[in-house]
Length: 227
Figure (tube, one colour):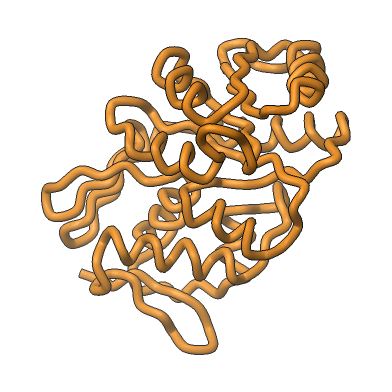
Protein backbone atom coordinates (compact mmCIF):
# COMPACT_ATOMS: atom_id res chain seq x y z
CA UNK A 1 0.00 0.00 0.00
CA UNK A 2 1.27 3.49 -0.81
CA UNK A 3 2.61 5.62 1.97
CA UNK A 4 0.23 8.56 2.00
CA UNK A 5 2.83 10.74 3.67
CA UNK A 6 4.68 10.84 0.37
CA UNK A 7 3.90 13.84 -1.83
CA UNK A 8 4.63 13.44 -5.53
CA UNK A 9 5.08 16.47 -7.77
CA UNK A 10 4.12 15.77 -11.37
CA UNK A 11 5.42 18.24 -13.97
CA UNK A 12 4.42 18.12 -17.65
CA UNK A 13 3.01 20.58 -20.16
CA UNK A 14 0.78 17.86 -21.65
CA UNK A 15 -2.54 18.09 -19.80
CA UNK A 16 -3.57 14.59 -20.88
CA UNK A 17 -0.41 13.10 -19.39
CA UNK A 18 -0.96 15.03 -16.16
CA UNK A 19 -4.48 13.67 -15.86
CA UNK A 20 -3.46 10.11 -16.75
CA UNK A 21 -0.48 9.88 -14.40
CA UNK A 22 -2.23 11.75 -11.60
CA UNK A 23 -5.19 9.37 -11.76
CA UNK A 24 -2.94 6.32 -11.40
CA UNK A 25 -0.89 7.81 -8.57
CA UNK A 26 -3.90 9.00 -6.59
CA UNK A 27 -5.60 5.64 -7.12
CA UNK A 28 -2.58 4.09 -5.38
CA UNK A 29 -2.98 6.46 -2.45
CA UNK A 30 -0.34 9.11 -3.13
CA UNK A 31 -0.89 12.82 -2.73
CA UNK A 32 -0.17 14.42 -6.11
CA UNK A 33 0.65 18.05 -6.92
CA UNK A 34 0.79 19.14 -10.58
CA UNK A 35 2.67 21.81 -12.52
CA UNK A 36 2.86 22.55 -16.26
CA UNK A 37 6.31 24.14 -16.45
CA UNK A 38 9.65 24.22 -14.67
CA UNK A 39 9.14 27.58 -12.99
CA UNK A 40 5.96 26.39 -11.30
CA UNK A 41 7.72 23.14 -10.33
CA UNK A 42 10.35 25.08 -8.36
CA UNK A 43 7.67 27.10 -6.60
CA UNK A 44 5.66 24.00 -5.66
CA UNK A 45 8.77 22.13 -4.52
CA UNK A 46 9.47 24.83 -1.94
CA UNK A 47 5.84 24.91 -0.86
CA UNK A 48 4.95 21.20 -0.67
CA UNK A 49 8.36 19.51 -0.16
CA UNK A 50 7.65 16.47 -2.37
CA UNK A 51 9.43 13.15 -1.81
CA UNK A 52 9.46 12.47 -5.54
CA UNK A 53 9.29 14.68 -8.63
CA UNK A 54 8.25 13.20 -11.98
CA UNK A 55 9.22 15.85 -14.52
CA UNK A 56 9.08 16.13 -18.29
CA UNK A 57 12.31 17.18 -20.01
CA UNK A 58 10.86 19.43 -22.70
CA UNK A 59 8.55 22.19 -21.39
CA UNK A 60 7.85 25.88 -22.04
CA UNK A 61 9.21 28.72 -19.86
CA UNK A 62 11.79 26.44 -18.21
CA UNK A 63 12.69 22.91 -19.25
CA UNK A 64 13.18 19.97 -16.91
CA UNK A 65 16.98 20.16 -16.99
CA UNK A 66 17.12 23.75 -15.77
CA UNK A 67 14.34 23.18 -13.25
CA UNK A 68 16.22 20.19 -11.83
CA UNK A 69 19.43 22.20 -11.51
CA UNK A 70 17.56 25.00 -9.75
CA UNK A 71 15.87 22.60 -7.33
CA UNK A 72 19.22 21.02 -6.48
CA UNK A 73 20.47 24.46 -5.48
CA UNK A 74 17.74 24.91 -2.83
CA UNK A 75 19.69 24.34 0.38
CA UNK A 76 16.85 24.68 2.89
CA UNK A 77 14.88 21.59 1.81
CA UNK A 78 15.43 17.86 2.01
CA UNK A 79 16.19 17.00 -1.57
CA UNK A 80 13.56 14.97 -3.44
CA UNK A 81 14.16 12.13 -5.86
CA UNK A 82 13.88 13.60 -9.36
CA UNK A 83 12.88 11.34 -12.25
CA UNK A 84 12.48 12.58 -15.80
CA UNK A 85 9.59 11.71 -18.09
CA UNK A 86 10.84 11.63 -21.64
CA UNK A 87 10.03 10.17 -25.02
CA UNK A 88 13.62 10.72 -26.08
CA UNK A 89 15.75 7.59 -25.79
CA UNK A 90 19.06 9.02 -26.95
CA UNK A 91 21.98 8.65 -24.55
CA UNK A 92 22.71 12.37 -24.54
CA UNK A 93 19.32 13.31 -23.12
CA UNK A 94 19.62 10.75 -20.33
CA UNK A 95 23.16 11.85 -19.50
CA UNK A 96 22.09 15.51 -19.53
CA UNK A 97 19.39 14.62 -17.02
CA UNK A 98 21.80 12.78 -14.72
CA UNK A 99 24.34 15.58 -15.00
CA UNK A 100 21.68 18.09 -13.93
CA UNK A 101 21.04 16.11 -10.76
CA UNK A 102 18.34 13.70 -11.90
CA UNK A 103 18.12 10.27 -10.29
CA UNK A 104 16.28 8.26 -12.92
CA UNK A 105 14.04 8.48 -15.99
CA UNK A 106 10.82 6.95 -17.28
CA UNK A 107 10.23 6.77 -21.02
CA UNK A 108 6.97 7.63 -22.74
CA UNK A 109 4.48 6.29 -23.62
CA UNK A 110 3.89 5.60 -19.93
CA UNK A 111 2.44 2.23 -19.00
CA UNK A 112 0.52 2.29 -15.69
CA UNK A 113 1.91 -0.92 -14.19
CA UNK A 114 5.48 -0.03 -15.06
CA UNK A 115 4.93 3.51 -13.75
CA UNK A 116 3.65 2.30 -10.38
CA UNK A 117 6.41 -0.29 -10.09
CA UNK A 118 9.00 2.39 -10.77
CA UNK A 119 7.45 4.88 -8.31
CA UNK A 120 7.31 2.27 -5.55
CA UNK A 121 10.93 1.32 -6.19
CA UNK A 122 12.05 4.94 -6.10
CA UNK A 123 10.21 5.66 -2.86
CA UNK A 124 11.65 2.54 -1.22
CA UNK A 125 14.96 4.34 -1.26
CA UNK A 126 13.47 6.92 1.11
CA UNK A 127 11.87 4.26 3.30
CA UNK A 128 15.13 2.41 3.84
CA UNK A 129 16.56 2.67 7.31
CA UNK A 130 17.75 6.15 8.18
CA UNK A 131 19.47 4.91 11.28
CA UNK A 132 22.98 5.32 10.09
CA UNK A 133 24.17 8.28 10.82
CA UNK A 134 27.42 9.94 10.26
CA UNK A 135 30.21 8.38 8.22
CA UNK A 136 33.48 10.26 8.50
CA UNK A 137 36.57 9.70 6.38
CA UNK A 138 39.42 12.18 6.34
CA UNK A 139 37.75 15.56 5.88
CA UNK A 140 34.57 14.24 4.25
CA UNK A 141 31.51 13.75 6.47
CA UNK A 142 28.48 11.88 5.09
CA UNK A 143 25.36 12.33 7.23
CA UNK A 144 22.68 9.85 6.14
CA UNK A 145 20.02 10.96 8.59
CA UNK A 146 20.08 14.62 7.60
CA UNK A 147 21.17 13.85 4.02
CA UNK A 148 24.13 16.16 3.66
CA UNK A 149 27.84 15.95 2.97
CA UNK A 150 30.46 18.13 4.62
CA UNK A 151 33.75 18.74 2.87
CA UNK A 152 36.44 20.45 4.93
CA UNK A 153 33.74 22.04 7.06
CA UNK A 154 31.62 23.20 4.13
CA UNK A 155 28.19 21.57 3.92
CA UNK A 156 26.81 20.67 0.49
CA UNK A 157 23.64 18.91 -0.66
CA UNK A 158 24.03 16.28 -3.36
CA UNK A 159 21.47 14.71 -5.68
CA UNK A 160 20.28 11.41 -4.24
CA UNK A 161 22.28 9.14 -6.53
CA UNK A 162 25.50 11.11 -6.07
CA UNK A 163 24.94 10.96 -2.30
CA UNK A 164 24.35 7.19 -2.32
CA UNK A 165 27.36 6.58 -4.54
CA UNK A 166 29.63 8.67 -2.30
CA UNK A 167 28.21 7.01 0.82
CA UNK A 168 28.99 3.57 -0.62
CA UNK A 169 32.61 4.50 -1.32
CA UNK A 170 33.11 6.30 2.01
CA UNK A 171 31.75 3.34 3.96
CA UNK A 172 34.48 1.10 2.53
CA UNK A 173 37.62 3.23 2.15
CA UNK A 174 40.30 1.48 0.15
CA UNK A 175 37.92 -1.11 -1.28
CA UNK A 176 37.75 -1.10 -5.05
CA UNK A 177 34.22 -1.32 -6.45
CA UNK A 178 33.71 -2.45 -10.01
CA UNK A 179 31.12 -0.64 -12.11
CA UNK A 180 28.94 -3.74 -11.93
CA UNK A 181 29.06 -3.69 -8.13
CA UNK A 182 28.22 0.02 -8.03
CA UNK A 183 25.27 -0.48 -10.36
CA UNK A 184 23.99 -3.34 -8.19
CA UNK A 185 24.42 -1.55 -4.85
CA UNK A 186 23.36 1.98 -5.79
CA UNK A 187 20.88 1.41 -8.62
CA UNK A 188 19.93 -2.19 -7.91
CA UNK A 189 17.29 -3.68 -10.17
CA UNK A 190 15.19 -0.54 -10.06
CA UNK A 191 16.35 0.87 -13.35
CA UNK A 192 18.46 -0.01 -16.37
CA UNK A 193 21.43 2.30 -16.78
CA UNK A 194 24.75 2.02 -18.53
CA UNK A 195 28.26 2.27 -17.14
CA UNK A 196 28.53 5.78 -18.55
CA UNK A 197 25.98 6.82 -15.94
CA UNK A 198 28.46 5.91 -13.19
CA UNK A 199 31.22 7.87 -14.91
CA UNK A 200 28.96 10.93 -15.11
CA UNK A 201 28.15 10.70 -11.38
CA UNK A 202 31.83 10.24 -10.46
CA UNK A 203 32.75 13.27 -12.54
CA UNK A 204 30.08 15.38 -10.81
CA UNK A 205 31.31 14.23 -7.39
CA UNK A 206 34.88 15.17 -8.26
CA UNK A 207 33.74 18.60 -9.38
CA UNK A 208 32.24 19.14 -5.91
CA UNK A 209 34.77 17.30 -3.71
CA UNK A 210 37.94 17.84 -5.68
CA UNK A 211 40.09 15.17 -7.30
CA UNK A 212 41.83 13.93 -4.14
CA UNK A 213 39.19 11.57 -2.76
CA UNK A 214 37.89 9.18 -5.42
CA UNK A 215 40.49 7.17 -7.30
CA UNK A 216 39.97 5.46 -10.63
CA UNK A 217 41.46 1.98 -10.84
CA UNK A 218 41.95 1.62 -14.58
CA UNK A 219 40.03 -1.25 -16.06
CA UNK A 220 38.44 -2.11 -12.70
CA UNK A 221 36.41 0.64 -11.06
CA UNK A 222 36.59 3.22 -8.27
CA UNK A 223 37.72 3.51 -4.65
CA UNK A 224 37.71 6.12 -1.87
CA UNK A 225 41.11 6.90 -0.41
CA UNK A 226 41.89 5.51 3.04
CA UNK A 227 42.86 7.61 6.06
